Length: 423
Image (cartoon, rainbow, N blue to C red):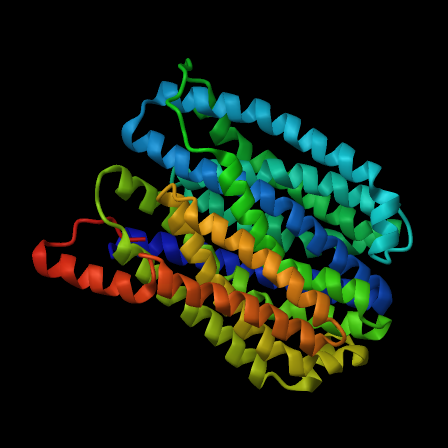
């Protein structure tokens, strides 16, 4: 692994943890400023927005892959044509998200026990603008502007949110939480958009055909369901106080997913570029997977050791019951982070097989939750079974299982010197 690659990976990883520290602070402030039922409602809104945004994350991931390919084998004019087409399409997608979710706000408020439609409307606009920010971040990934990627993770998707939260909550109550998220996103767009605009100023030509973005969107939506629908089920099915306990546990447990898996943001464009050059990327994937698993396990160990007094001292006495759920949730999310690396490699390879498997896993997860939803522990078990089964299936039926990639990497190392660009 080159020193430049290690440095960029480290920058993105540190930014991801900083962003999650900011999000932790966001929830901490929210938990102190609103009631436990309102806190659970905020968590449910954010989980719902995350699920919707994950379809857009599919566009972000496909954009990162396509831009990396165009930079490797295309021209600046083709890249400009691609970006202009992407901009037109994303403008329409974002407008549709805002209109449709706002129209459904009364129904969503009722089903998720939010209490009023206004926070859902604000959440709809936040999700729509976040869609634009995510795709701009995908362009930064593909062009390997990883410092911009780090800014997006640490700032508008992280630390800016708690900075803005208190003022907006004081002005607008619980709805202010969504307004703070929206304001942070707008700041992010103002910083991230100029480099993309510069790339678009090149006189465009029609880009070459690219793989279907829809397939990538479906894959990420299925993954998002696997890692977020548990919170919606908890909000809909558990007693009121248990909703808050589960929301608090999910807040910390999912750090084991989102923080280490940020390494895959560096992996994706580099693996796509290596494959475009006809090189193997197994070594890249294995190193990313090892670091991702180590980061997730470190988070799980830290949450297992954290004193209950620290939890109640930060969130409040009502959240002490979340403690037994922290480490199990973190372990499940560590497995999900490894699954995420598998998905990013499949997307870099332009493979649809992994997407089909993830859709089946998401459907199975829903089926498990239909029976296992009477307690927070049951919900964690349902997620563990679904995600664990997906990883086992990859090992047994996929050529990209960890053991097979290790054997391939060793065989390649004996035959020829390594030529792949490290993550």
